[in-house]
Length: 91
Image 1 (cartoon, one colour):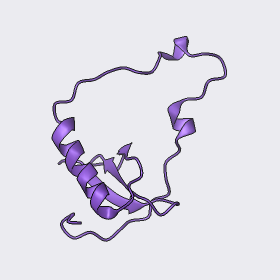
Image 2 (spheres, one colour):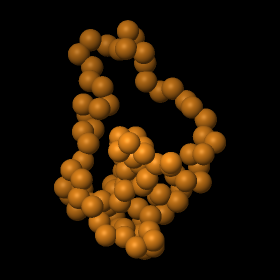
Image 3 (cartoon, one colour):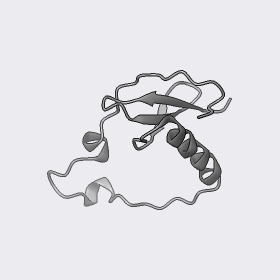
Image 4 (tube, one colour):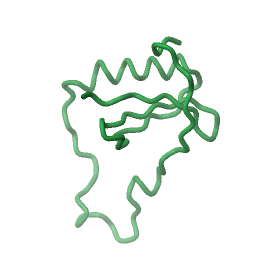
């Protein structure tokens, strides 16, 4: 079974989507989009580019991090989930 894209509005009323695994684990959360149509275009772009995307490591290994630095998870907490009704993901 494939993962699922879930479209929602965040606390600032921006549209976002998240990619969830079949077991419901959130695998990725998008940036905010100004409209539902723009978020749907973002989903289409992820579908197009992620399939064969290369891996590029940007973060240092835990032993290489500076003391007192915060992880990205601490800087970007998971947004509040507020589902939006979508039919066929059309804008």
